[in-house]
Amino acid sequence: MKKRLCFVCFLFGAVILAACGEGKEILEDSNVVPYESENVVTPQESPEEQSLERTVDLETLFAEYEEALAAEYENFLMPEKITIEGSRPCVMVEAVVPSDYDKYADEMAQTVLGDLLPEQYELVEIPTGALVYDDEDNKLYFSIDKSGFVSFEKSVGYKIRLSNDYDVVDIVHVDRGDSLDASYVLEDGEESLQDAVRYVENWFHENWTAFESDFTFRVKTIEIRQNGDKYFYSMTVEKFFNGVPLENIFTLGGSSDENGRIKYIPAIITLRMFNCDSIDVFTNSTTMLEIRETEEAEDGWLSLKDCMRMLEQLFAEYQVYEISDIEIKYVISPDYASLDPSITNPGYAMPGMHMKLRPVWSLIIDIPREKLLNANGSFTAGDERFYINVDMRTGEVWFDVG
View 1 (tube, rainbow, N blue to C red):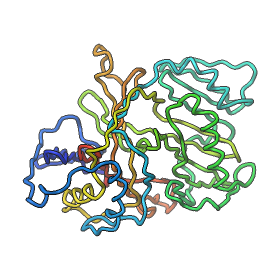
View 2: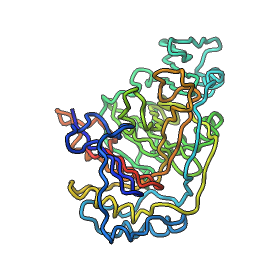
View 3: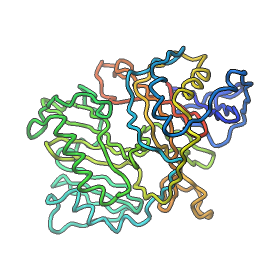
View 4: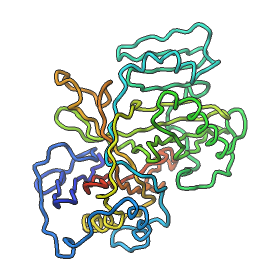
């Protein structure tokens, strides 16, 4: 198995909790630090480090980040531009997982499948508690559970679903400003990337936000995959709260404590377009969220410049990393204490679970295509990435760099 390097560093107090410290094996298949760590190291700061300006106000946070991009680092190659739009992050956002979204089952099914549904259809409850409609003859599938986990499939997507057994011919980073001029032949005609993005974002605005009104949604990445002599678009859609996206890297949630409690979860929305102006496969992967409380602050923010100076020291003994993008995001942490203590082995997205959203500097490292090729030379992995996340308030660091 691939082994991961993992640790937590707290900028304030200069405490490093090392999950990969001396006398401990590196955690396999893990990319976040467990809740408990026996290895605590308190490094001595130099006079120069002690004199660093640790925090800035929000205005300075966005006014000076270009200095961090222009600087040279021993172990980081910085991108020329990054995906930061100046949106004001909150110190903390508290959200809750819905507990009754199954009551919207018929309304949601009608919304996402529309006229494709027969006049008479039946939603069947399965052992997990989800309500499901599965029609093999008409190639339609829909499911929803109490927490708002929704999936649907239609048309050719009913068979292919989210299979990655299809070559990726290109990856387009919409959020980074990649060109959307190209067009590809889909099952029922040719559609440009620009028109596909416009359709999907309009669809979310007109349909999905009625069920998850605290957020807005935008296409982040498109993988163009080939199916015989046709193509289809696989899209990742970001969820934004007041202009700041929620973390959507799938591998973020790897590690758990002895009770199976995951520390971080992603907010991933994945869809596929096989036909023009049609979402044929969809999953929001985890749950919907309802915002309950926010906490704001003008001061006390870790600037990108000081963040990079800290990371330069922290990664001094490792290789040089080429940073593809830097974003401000919210990471999502389940608050297990919000559940009834009598519940044993709770899932990370149980109905009624509270979630804490915290802002981070997220350094994105795209994994080169050549490192993801199959044995036969084909490329089906798609958009895979490593990351380094740094809490913008505490300086806590966690990462997956391979």
